[in-house]
Image (cartoon, rainbow, N blue to C red; front, side, top):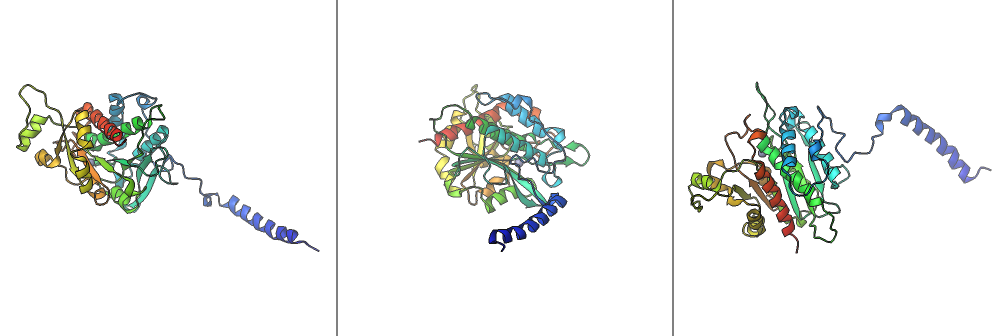
Length: 351
Ligand SMILES: [Zn+2]
């Protein structure tokens, strides 16, 4: 008599054998676990995190900000054009950096979250503070760029938008650093958004498939071009408004803002955002007061349809989308002030 256990062994062993043969013959059919650090992206070239950016350092550091801006706008990145695939190594290096900071991905696909774009897959790079299932502050900056000039090489895109990415990354580093466990640490998320310059496709995917509960978001800050500020007097005169600065007194650099979510505007334009801007040494003005330098279409207009969103920008300039948008022309103190503003806003979410 053959027991039930024996029957099942007789049936299972051949099945297992066939299965093992299939596995051995078709190794590609078994996909490896998704790496959280985006290293499975099809990379046309590789980027290394500069040595200057490694290791802990307190306070927003000019050399960190400069290092990121120079890395992202270097000719090696070929202008970070999304539909050419040249932005993917930038996404990968940002994902790797998120991992090194101890940030967490929002789902099992890792820091790089794919979305369909131009018959391929493009990526938003999303990290959240440890354990932050429901972030209250979200900082977004697009990492893609204009690509290659027809005859004169890559567009550096230092201000647009390496500057915004650098400030976002330095905020992420400092907001996750520190040793005190008792201090208030409001949950936050940082997003390097993809394919902004080719239709704001990354922002649209964030809207279509939110990576965390939208109801928890008190404020989304979109950074786009934050490294070329003009002095308050100059901006005021250009825009035809009273500058209010006395002769001989150096005016604070102007930071433009625009609300793409009415709720965020009412909540913050005269509250924590104004206080954080003052603390970080900016004169805050509505983008409309920056005259013809008002940026038009950004991720903020997309996200603001459902997320409480404010765009921060130092405004357009003659080098916008031109070869002259180089790292040398970035006012690094402006990018540092943006980082400090974000840290100040983050603190102000504490009770
Ligand atoms: Zn931009």
